[in-house]
Amino acid sequence: MMLIPCPWCGPRDEIEFHYGGQAGVAYPQDPQAVSDQDWAEFLFFRDNPRGEFAERWLHAAGCRRWFGLRRDTVTNRVLDSDDTRTVTQ
Image 1 (spheres, rainbow, N blue to C red):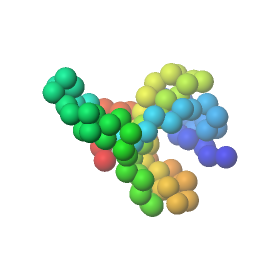
Image 2: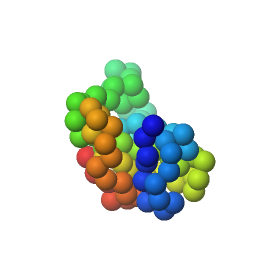
Image 3: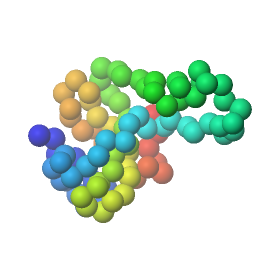
Image 4: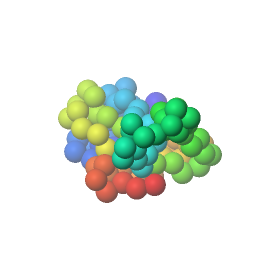
């Protein structure tokens, strides 16, 4: 079980959250001009590193806010969490 620190509600059990994927993935500025291949890469291809990784999480059973989390993917140790306006990869 992982304890996730919500920036607004404090540490909570992971069952209260939904994983939102890799942080810092920018939506295409002109989606109509993007090729099918580039669109597929935007939708489905994400980094999968061993070690530190920036992610987005939703506190679904709490404040219902999105926030960023930096986590070590090998140990599941949470390194940092903050609201999404300040999290970068």
